Image (cartoon, rainbow, N blue to C red; front, side, top):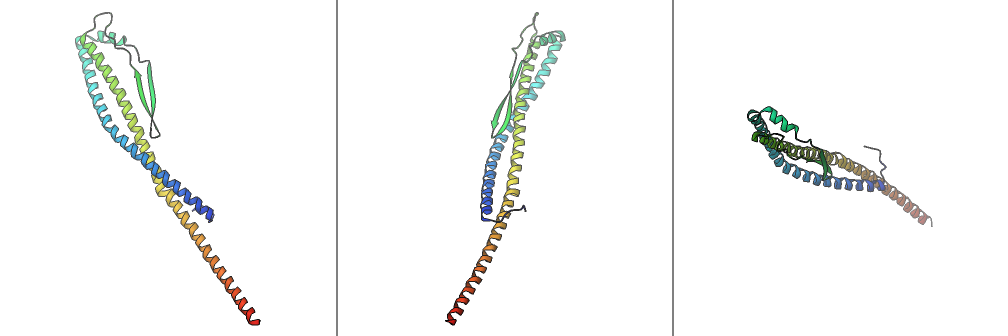
Length: 212
C-alpha cells in the first residue's frame, strides 16, 4: 500500500477519489454499451458489403473476359486509357462516442462511353462492371475500417473499466479501511487516556475532600 497519512482529511480525499472512480467506471460502461450496439449494427452492413464486393468482382472479371473475347484486347485497352484518373479521395472523420472514425469519399471520374472508334457493348459493360467493383471496394473499406476501430475502442474501454473496478476502486477501499482503522484506534486510545485522566482527577478530588 502506498504511503498515506491516516488523517480525516486523507479519509475525505480517498472517499472523493472512490466516488470519481465509480462515476468514471459507470460512464465508461455506458460508452462501451453504446459502442457494442454500434458494432453489432455494423456487422450486418459489413457482411452485406462483403457479399456485394464478391459479386461485383466476379461480374467485373467475367465482363472483362467477355470484352476481350468479343471486342478484342486492343479495344478494351483503348477504352481503359481514356478513363481519367481519380483526382480526389477525401477522408471525413466522424466522432462515435469519442472514437475518431474515417469515412472515405471518392470523387469518381465520369464514365468514358466511347473512343475514336465505335466501342463494343461488351467493353462498355466491362467498364460499368469495374466501376461497380471499385465502388463496392470503397464501401467495404469504409465499413470494415469503422468496424475495426470501434472494436479496438471497445477493447480499450473494457480494459479501463476492469482497471477501475478490479484495481483502482479496491485499492481505494483498502486505503479507506486502513485510515478508518487507524483513526478508530486513535479514538479508542484517546478515550482510554481521557478515562485515566478523569479517574486520577476524581481520585485526587476525593483525597482532597478527605483531608478537609
